[in-house]
Image (tube, rainbow, N blue to C red; front, top):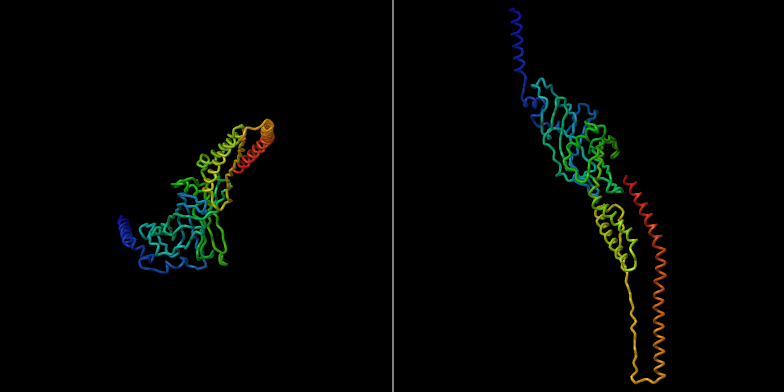
Length: 389
């Protein structure tokens, strides 16, 4: 029994002495990692013990806002959240030696940060909001978080407008390191990043995020191979606004234009109705021209042509003799009046015959033109349907 008591007492003394040697403060860990003073080596040198080893920089991007798409400048504005992870081989510790400290935050200025930029970036630097701190873990992994109001260029294809789907690339690459120094990758999979982006999405406007895809590739820049990480963002337009405000009115005017063939030409209502429909479509085309980008083919310009009506009135002149005429003079005057009346009646008959010929010609042309017009509309609508679907 005395021997057991002696062993228990010695174990207790060993535990007390070991607990007294443990440093449970952040100061002790910072001192152990040589971060108490300014260490320029850790901030300027790529954190590898062997320079031939590459640094794997893993970058996850979440898109939590689609602010707008500018078709004229071919740019997309969005809110993104970025998290970079890499390993610093000089900053490792055993958590059991520091009272199970599993994470440490240090200023960004004290550590080496990968110089990763975005090739398609068209935004200003003031929109970047980076955390002044980075998280350091016992295995040496460093996490740096930041969010950005990103405006990036995108080649928009508007052939199927307003039922279009756009694929835009956001390319991450290093500005100074080649593929032998930095290799870019991701921590999460494409499916996880797409699901998280849809979950945290706060605003989309008239666009909806479909998916995020990641592509790893190596490109050559200045005769040096560089690692690139491409995020392919797929977004689709919500077309209901354009269907209600643009497509439905155009179909309505198309039906009215077809109905104008059944209007009689007798009083000129058909011409006035056609001009009204033409002017209405011209206004809609001007609105559509403001919606579409200037880089696309120019929309048809409709110039209203005015027809000038010219009418001539022939005054009838009557001459009264100053003196009372004699019989033969009176007869000659009556004969001339009769000849003039017959000539005037002949001209009126000719004027009545000419519109008759034109009317018969119009009765032949009008059904043929209506059939061709209807066939053209059907072919156009079928082509548009197959193009959109």
